[in-house]
Image (cartoon, rainbow, N blue to C red; front, top):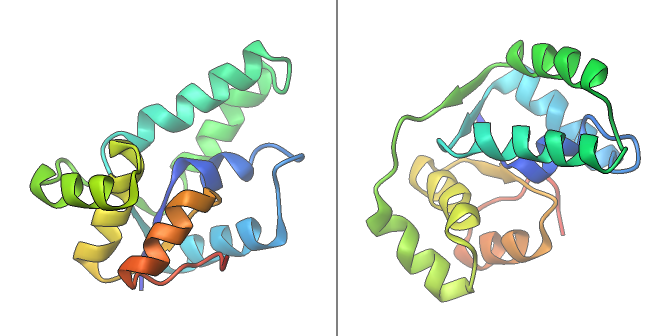
Amino acid sequence: MPLVVDASVTLAWYFPDEQTPKALEAREALARDGGLVPPHWWYEVRNGMIMAERHGRTTEQLIAPALLNLARLPIDQISRQDDTDIFPIARRHRLTFYDAAYLALAQREQIGLATLDAELAHAAAAEGVSLIIPL
């Protein structure tokens, strides 16, 4: 069964200081079962990479192959989400709209969520969404 993967866990795969066994397990699950992401994931991941480059955590030469590796993973980006599902989650759990979109997608599809964001993970648990990376 596919999973929803957020930018926090995606970026952890490419930065050694953020890699955890659970994040790597999530990558294996995604490679095996496929994943879904909301439209903004593409931008969030690339923004994380360019910010890491600016802070000396990676280089332009490392970003290009990382993006090629990421493109090889079975990740389907949905084209649009209904914001009427996202606003209540964002309000209820005081999440950013971006994070609430990951949770709403996992909830709608009735699949697990992979995140390293503690607030998002707590909200997912409260909403009954299974976590690929347990709290």
